[in-house]
Length: 253
Ligand code: PGA
Image (cartoon, rainbow, N blue to C red):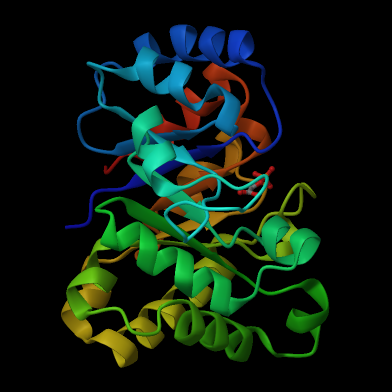
């Protein structure tokens, strides 16, 4: 039985005051949730404030990115020591916006994933095809390449401990969600590929989240799919009530 994960990716939204106000309103709404993991990913500037506000609750925090080197002359980058010091237990890696707007490739995703694991934090590794790739019937090939490249060199135990977010690029921020069948088909493919790479036991443990226009109205049907173990939520996670409803629909039933 895999514990579902409901993760909020706030992207470049919320000041410290706004992030703290969200957390103060949100925590009471999920206080009784003990059968799902909840993760909030604020921007770096609000990470320590949100992690501090979540201390003593079951809600965890994530960084939205990290650099793989421990320190050095990397202007604008943030290290694992820094995100752990701010209170994060998870790190989102290879989000499609990082890949498409900032040129991150599978090699960078792999270096970051390995660094996060070596540091004892949990990576949330994002994969997904563009609309052009889906229409050209390349979805499976793209996912295979991202899985093989991003997870290269990980032990089966490490693969079992990570979280993978399948986020079709055409569904992110567009209001166009994958249908539950499309999500299940892609997730089943991802799990098979992870099994080929790291063995069945690792693939059965690894949590696979769906992301892309998840909302309170569709979260239940998506989460009910056998290979969907929760959601990575952007726009609909910015409001405490909306994200709490998504958490409620993502809980095991
Ligand atoms: P969205 O974003 O829910 O706004 O589509 C999801 C994501 O990018 O993680």
